[in-house]
Image (cartoon, rainbow, N blue to C red; front, top):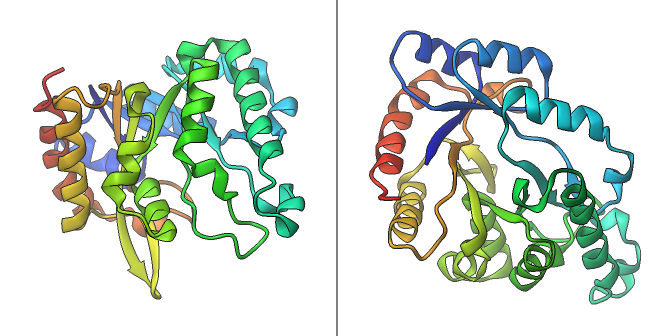
Length: 270
């Protein structure tokens, strides 16, 4: 398994100084970031593509495939992320989810037909309730629906541990039970990040807390025991570029937490 880290200037400086070691940088599909990261380590692109809102019909597929090839990105990721404002009928009938599931599947099929099922992975998003139009549709995080889409299309799973834990919390479920119910036999990529309470709200993409380390350790044991498929990449989603991430790119956190994460990944026998 490879270990990847969100690209940030802080991470780049630590790597250049030999204070951390990683296999790849995980980058957004921004040319300048990819160029900067690729000067230090191999990169792969994490695309902002969504399955569930029909936006893939207008995607620049030629550009996507060119970027996949130029960066040797192994998988094309899609977020299972339909939002409430895309489906006004759900405001009247929360159970009217057939159109949502059908659209997600149709969108995944578009990607599969372009690059092949073996190169497509779908990511679980965090369900945080459906009290506003911008909220994700709850059925997108339903384990049975995710399994149905993966089985029907032949794609793989990108499991985001923090997203899954947030979803379980808002659904009133045990996080281990919820994660275990996901199609983990199709796991191709794993994301890990911390969750902090900020203004009484859980916020992801933070430094790892004691609880976060415990879930990471559990996940590595599941992979080591063969309960989950072994992902090609484990990515630490801390740090980044721009207003959303630059305030959570503390070099002290990166230097302290990357080495033990790498050690945990390397210890798995796959």
